[in-house]
Length: 225
Image (cartoon, rainbow, N blue to C red):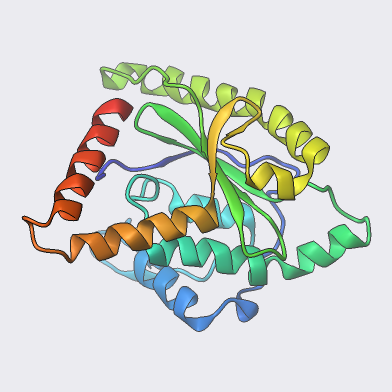
């Protein structure tokens, strides 16, 4: 859960798509700034980062942070708010035929997998998915080739993702457990699961639901490593 997510690809076709933060609910803006709005690159100073203007800027702020893994309900809500409200102008452009049909997206490496977030502009949903298990560097010397391989995996997959979403439509794609060969789930469904997990964590340690939850989480973590 504590491993960072590493940015691997923001497709050029959607990198400059703007995010209208004025339309994103205040609670999500506050959560984003509290979680990613502080620049600590210089240990002697603390700087406040501005809200990211584009999808590329957003993905870069998520880079090297605890993004994938345990994603709390607030993070899913943030992504849903961006999709529904922050990208509303992008949705209008698509209706008028001035933009591609496939929403903005980005790819990150987390543990042994390449993951993606696909926004559905103007809709309160999105799709997240992950690749088959990939090689993970055993030493720092392998980091650069590994990163290049991760990017190549994302670049090879992205056209297939676009083709699948365009062919089936976003409504159908949202309900598929595999999209273009990768396991996938919806952001809305993942939010409900995160809310259930958070509620279960409030139960006593000896509660059957709490014990089952711990076993499921540990089993999932073991299978991903």
